[in-house]
Length: 277
Ligand code: AMP
Image (tube, rainbow, N blue to C red):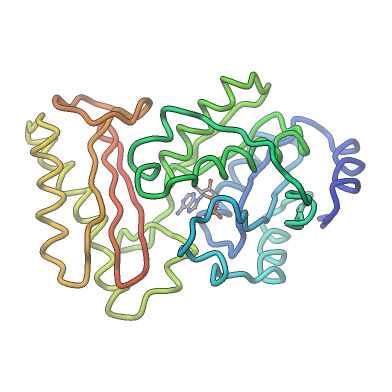
C-alpha cells in the first residue's frame, strides 16, 4: 500500500494503477463502516484508492472541525489490512490554496434535511468531492447509505457535471444493538451510548407501522418522534419521511421511501436512516 500526500505525487502514482480504479473518500478515524466501503471497492475494482481529509469547508461555525477525531497511523494500519492500494492524505493548504474562490454547488437536493440545519455543508462536500474526483479520476466511487442525503447529492452532482464515474452506495454498518457506526460515536459517554440505540429503534418502529399498513407520512414521522421521546437523554432535531431521490417530504408513502433523523445525545449529533421496502 502506497501513502501519498502531495497532488503531484498522487497524479504520478494514479497513472500507474491498473483499472478499473475504485475510490473511497473519507475523513479518517476509520471504523468498520468505512472498511466495508473499501471491501466493496475491492470487489468491483482492480485498484482501490482511499482519501483521508477532514474537509474544513463542510463544517459550519460552532461545529466540531477542531475536535474531529483523528488517528492517521491507526487508519493506515486498518487500510493496509483491508487491502487498499493507495492512500491519499491531502493537506488543507493544497486543497484550498490561498485565494481559493471556486465552488461546486448542487442547488436543490441540498436544501431540505441536513441542508436546512447545516447551511453551506453540502457546498463544502460537493466542492471537495469534485476536487477529489478530478485528482483521482476513479472509474467507481463508493459512499455510505449512512449519509443518505450526501449520497443523493453526490449522485446528482455526478450526473450534472457528467463525471464518467459509477457511484456505488453501500449499506450502513451497525453495531449489534443497531447503532450505526460513526466516527462521532467516540464522543458518547456510557449512558449516552446506551441511549443512542433510540435512533435505530425509532426507525424500526416506523418501519413496523409501515409494514402494518400505515401509509401516512405524518403518522410515520410521529411514530419516530414518539419513540425518541421515550429516551430522556435524546433530543430530536428532525425526523423525515421523504422521497429518496428528491428528499421532499411525503404525504402518502410507498416502497423506497427514506426515513431519516437527527438526534442529539448531549452535544453529539447523530444521524441515521432507513429505506422502507
Ligand atoms: P466520513 O469519514 O464520515 O466522511 O465517511 C466516509 C464514508 O463512509 C461516507 O461515504 C460515509 O457515508 C461512509 N460511512 C460512514 N459510516 C458508515 C457506516 N456505518 N456504514 C457504511 N458507510 C459508512
